[in-house]
Structure formats: C-alpha cells, structure tokens
Image 1 (cartoon, helix red, strand yellow):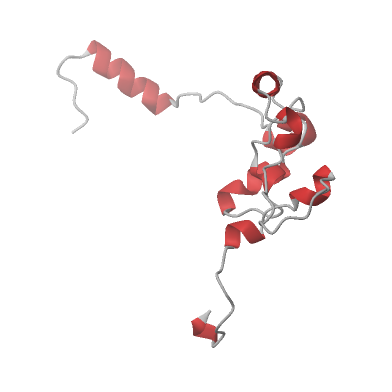
Image 2 (cartoon, rainbow, N blue to C red):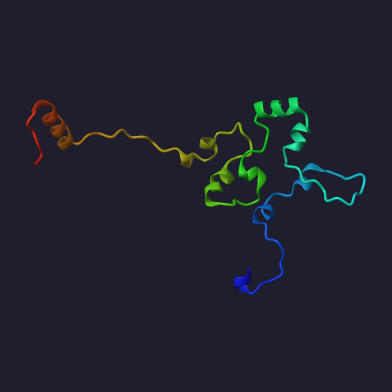
Length: 130
C-alpha cells in the first residue's frame, strides 16, 4: 500500500478478510467474558462438535465444508470461480443446474486423404510421402 501513499494501515491479511463470518452463521454466544481473543473455528465445528465418531460420519455423508464457496465470500483466485457457480448441496449434479456445461459429442470422421495415406502406408512398404 506504500505505492499509493497509504501507510500505517496494519497487517494486511487478504485471505482472512474474504472469509465468511462464521460467528453469525453458528449462533455462538460466549457465556464468560475472557481477556483472551475468541477462538475462531471453521464451519465444520457445528457438524462434528469435537466428536471423532461424528467427524467420520460427516466425512461419509460429505457434510464438511470443502469447496471454497462454502468458506469464502468471494473467489480468491480465478481458478476458484467454478466452485462459486456450484450448488452447496453435494447431491446436486452441476450438469443439471448448468446445462451449458454439457455439449454434444461428435465422433471424428477421417478424411479421404487420411484414409488413403493409412492404406498406402500399410500396403506398400516403400511408400513415402516425399
């Protein structure tokens, strides 16, 4: 930011600033005020709540936040744009929600010149294009 003559703005953390606010999503209320900073847990804590068996069950059911659109508000890189188009529901296929992804497949038909060359190479040992 010194390039723009902006100084003393503090430590810049672009990844943390683009993360979703988890405290508003999970309705956490701190009962005892402490002098320590609050522990910011990921959004997966509400799913497993530090239980090993619930964590493995959540992995089996694909309930944990894995895509960047579930963790960040905006894409951090251009490669993450695709995950922001995807649905939050893991059971929904992207081909159904975005039909423009699928295209008709057409087989590649060999031209007559290609067929002639392959036939000539296979049948004549001395054949050469040049």
